Length: 167
Image (cartoon, rainbow, N blue to C red; front, top):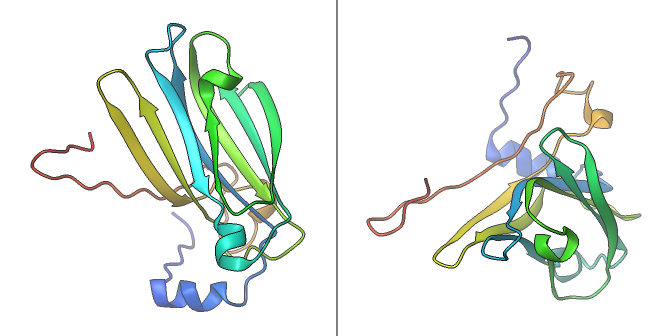
């Protein structure tokens, strides 16, 4: 397994105050149907401005097929304190099954390499939503305390109740 380092939440928060991260990213499953009955939406409140006062963040959105091939991409300037949304059906024509990557970049320190983003897959009769505080690990971040040659990393929270099931 190699050298594994486990860091407590308290240690992680302490390191974040000293860390410098100019980028952040996340990845989600994306699906939409050609008849409009299934769609995927990625949305976030621009906490970069609201919590950190950073207004020069640019988000690069990439749609990739199941083999990782780039289908379409575009950039969003995140310079307003509002919610931003990406709807798969507005970017992809016809049926789609793949992924949505969102990369955030700034000239200022984002402090944490993880971004808080919400993804929902909607149908006529249901909404499946998941919130992540996670990132897609980039090659430039390898060689430090993480020493894996190929990986995608993210963190998820699933909560079940007697009336709501996550899976």
